Length: 546
Image (cartoon, rainbow, N blue to C red; front, side):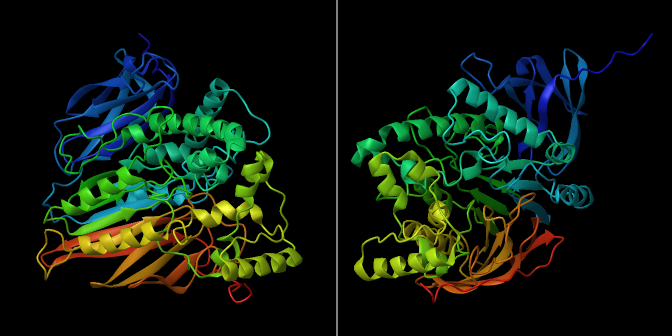
């Protein structure tokens, strides 16, 4: 009798999601109904997949299964089944987290910016995963390039209806994640994902077109606003079902943090979707800066009021035996000088705001620009006049399409109050519920800028030096060698009592590796950016020009 052939009915997956010391989530996208599938964990049993779509409509056809009753710090083999038969290629392994008080060392990886044109260093990451067996992987934004990789879903002036757009967004996920090496990694390590702008549209929340604050003031921009918000909400729905749904939820077992996102935000609402989780003596706080971002809003324009409440609750309730706090912000928290060349040149420009007032969508989203030196000089003169007069003076069109890139940075004037608050509160959280002579260690992680680098952040109240590791990108990199002074700065004051100094920079494909080694006196952190290219990138200092 011939053996029955294995089925092949998955479009994507499996992906290992949030895992604690007794449970693990597995995600799939099916070609039919994900509720028809089951998860078999060798030696532990069979678990049902449930649809992530709870309204009865099967659009994305994504599902989750949660294996429970597992052993801490134990490696498991799993496979996906449909009607008693194994689905071909739908298998993998995962290791549960160590228990909260465990002194086991922890290794984890951090990546961002997964462009489709090349695999970058995905193969190197896969080999490292196989050899080092890290506890988890952080994907810190731009898991897909909805707006850039072909097919271009957001391509002004062409617009498509929501149904067509949502199908195109889902297809972009399939194209990006169905690469063999990407599948191999995601199927074999617990993975945590947070979105950034390219999971929606470049610079989302940093342009005038995206701002509820501005549309209330300037009604000529209302049609433009409605259009881009429709795109945003379709991308956010896809983000939920492909990424956020397998992150930690409030009802997950052993959750010790006040995670509050359990469903995708309703249309018409803006809501940030942060989360936190624990691995042994390490706590990881993952913040997101797109869900509520409105840089023109007076209060909390980057993170939003509810996310700040979440941050304060996490910091106030850190358990005594948490030796290390890792904080993820998709854009680097302290990599650019607020008084450096980029912010001087672009930070005060309002070209998009003026176009929004006129209802000129092209002028907001894809304005005419040049790289000419003459326009650079004009822009520099305008920047100096802006600082002298306190009023924006927009001269020339030198790289004006990069206004959103300047506003995306924590060093921008709109973001600096929240930047300083987050850094100061994180430093003080080192002593929360800890003996005064044994403060916990602190590390910041980020992506976004297509450059890998490490900064040392020095605090004076209390005295401490933290590491900022930026890993960007796994398969996208800066298209210029003029990195220092453009993408990152070297040595600068971030805010009162906070200084940042560049230790290393890599203008090539890269991924981050962090090792946490607990000890009776606390913990040691080792962080590096793994890469193939040179760990030096030249720059040009234009700050004196402007």
